[in-house]
Amino acid sequence: MLHTVNKSPFNSTDLEDCLRYAQSGDSILLFQDAVYAAMAGTKVEASVKGAMGDKKVYALSADLKARGVVNTIDGIQTVDYGGFVDLTSADKVNCW
Amino acid sequence: MSEAPEKIMFVFKNPPHGNIHAYEGLEFVLITAAYEQDITLVFIGDGILALKKDQDTQELGIKGFMKTWRTLDDYEVEKLYVDKKSMEERGLTPDDLIVPVEVKEANDISGIMKEQHVIYPF
Image 1 (cartoon, each protein chain N blue to C red):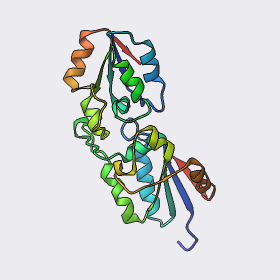
Image 2 (cartoon, rainbow over the protein chains, first blue to last red):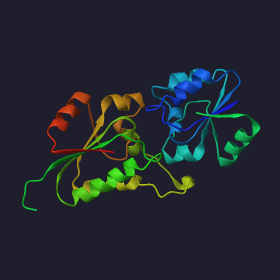
Image 3 (cartoon, chains in turn red, green):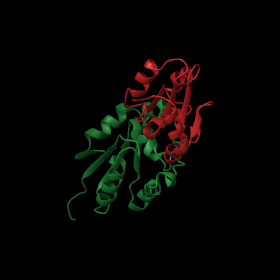
Image 4 (cartoon, each protein chain N blue to C red):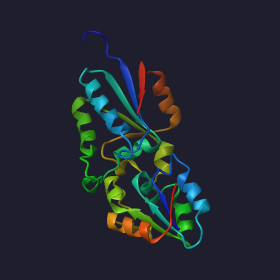
């Protein structure tokens, strides 16, 4: 399953909820304000890294650039809009 | 205006592109600054992210307003405070931000809030 998150991890529990429900082998796509979760050095870095042990985490490049998120957590894959479409069409989607 | 300037505080709480609050707030600051009021800007929570360097909104197809923050200095809006805890939670230091800011504890910001005539949240 693909989980998509679009709210800031600092003022919404969407990411936290998503990580609690996502299962091994699932994918998580961060876009809009959720790309702040991909920023290195934040208070949610540890939980994102924890999820990356058995899940793939993606972030939308246009949203990273718009927000100046240059230093992302190692191992997070960036995707463009085409990649976003590929991910959503390849799997069931759960929008948090 | 002949009256003494009002002490006006703008509190930025929202990230820059997910909603219009930060943009509207900045517009309001610039309009208010034209009337030579005593203006203070405070950035707490995700509001700090509006000041993040390296923002490039080209791929979103929007103009962005990152550069507008730099005009504050021309309007003599020089009191920009950021909340220490919010900075730490986001792994940011003043070097990561577009404009010079002073990092303050919530308690100090609270004291400055008490001195204001008006506080506008954005």
